[in-house]
Each structure stands twice: as C-alpha cells, then as structure tokens.
Length: 152
Image (cartoon, rainbow, N blue to C red):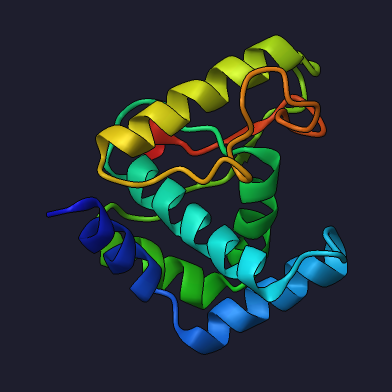
C-alpha cells in the first residue's frame, strides 16, 4: 500500500460531516484562526496518528495540534469507537499524563519518535502539525498525552 493509499484509508474512515464538525469544534475551542484547509490537514494528521498508534506496540504521542483534534474526536464517542474498530485494533485510549511535569525536551523527543513511526507506517507528516526540533509549541500544554499500547 502506498503512502497516499494508507493516508486516504485512515482519513476516509471519518465522514465528511464528522470532519467538518471536528474542524468547527477545534476552531471554536482552541484554534480560532485555523483555516478550513488547515482543519482538513489536521484531521488527516490525527487519523494518520491514530492508525499508526493502532499498528504499533510502542507508545505514540501526538503533537499539541494533533492532540486538539484527537480530543475533539474522542468526544464523538460512537464515531470514535467505530473508527478504532475499523482500524482493527480495539479502542485507542487517550491517556493524559499530568504527573510527570512539562519537559519540552522529552516532549520533542516523543513527537520525533511518533513522527518516525508514522512515516515508517506509510503516512506523511505535515510540518505544521509536527513541528521541527526547537519549535516553541511542539510539546503538550502539560506533560503530554499518548495512546495506550498496553491496553490494546
């Protein structure tokens, strides 16, 4: 399967209506200046992140921008559960880690590992959603969120 086919498959598991709703929700809750095009790319990056998380036993950590889309998606419990089931992995749990304290260096390293896993899985990583080393907004607002590879 090519990168385009893989990304399209994960993205297509989210209906156009739900994608539009997620974009609206993210715009209203945390990113008011986001364009529709950025929103579509955000949904694509989130779907790619979740498909990667579904296919690995390693901990996957989203960037802050990907995480806001994941938060919005999780609130659509039925659609989110259906998406996870369609990936064939069971429910992908969202696991916040508020106890370890913010550590920008660790956050950047975790995101680099996750972006690498995504590329290995055949997905493209959008630099606006996976900031380069040293970018100011590349770690979580608190210690971070990840999937739960043990709980799969």
